[in-house]
Image 1 (cartoon, rainbow, N blue to C red):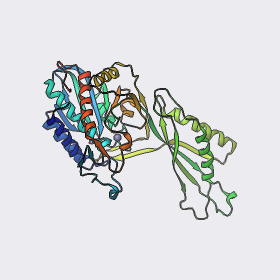
Image 2: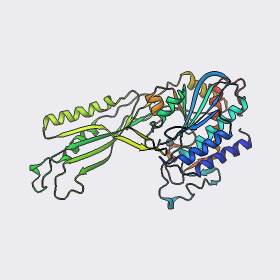
Image 3: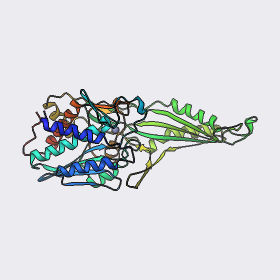
Length: 403
Ligand SMILES: [Zn+2]
């Protein structure tokens, strides 16, 4: 167990973070709160970067690996406020839970690793090897892994611990995602004589049907398939008054498996377009990835295509096994499993090839919900996990006792 005072401080920190709204692009106040915490806890470094990510570091007395605890500090909006029984920014404790937007996704986890790292530094008197970094990352909710690029460039971690909800299991893989855009181009005309034009929506429908017939790829060790799901269709002009539409755009959510690239994802889709347009020269279409652009609270802009790759670690690699053993030694029975949703790990593990593991409290299906909450016991347990990670990875002269 963590001692009672530490538990109370952890709960208070979680509540402090939950009381501050921090929608994507408006995370400054919560980043400042985390900076205050890091400075009060004698972190060796604490700063915000160009994008507004908040970073802190504690250095051991001996050289060694750099590990990074990553948690995003933005949340999705608290919509349907009247449906919430607990104020989304009230950080209310009720029974065994703390309620609030971001409790599961993922301010609870951020509070836990901040606490764990500060306890580890204090109780080891920094007699460990390497550096422990913590990052509160902006703009994850709709732009996974893009703001994190700045962090990996600054920190160059040897291992990243993704704090997203894992139900206290160890996540060794994660599906990625991409937003695929299909555009078709027709010829407008009066809809009373449609044969005079080319209807862009009919063209899109043909292609969409063929896209949907493609079997999703599967991989052993990945949780979920490489599915392609239509998410919206727009036509122009809209509304179309007695006119054959000249343009249609359909967006798909494509979940990605390990090794899939921009080229490999588009190739089979382009082949369908090539085949159909060879058979019908009036069919004009193109397929690409959606472009994303967001403004950070610092004023900096982040822009990238919406392609967030997957990653996977073998469950028998030494860091996974070391963390697994450390957590089991405390009496927990985590499963070695994978995330089916997308996280900042898309950058660290997928783009940058840095070893990753996911360790977080709570269930992913509590994220983004009305009356989002975290179980206080899980908040405490995950803090112990995070200390166990430090014990396992940082070679402390005397491991911190979390019994
Ligand atoms: Zn999240």
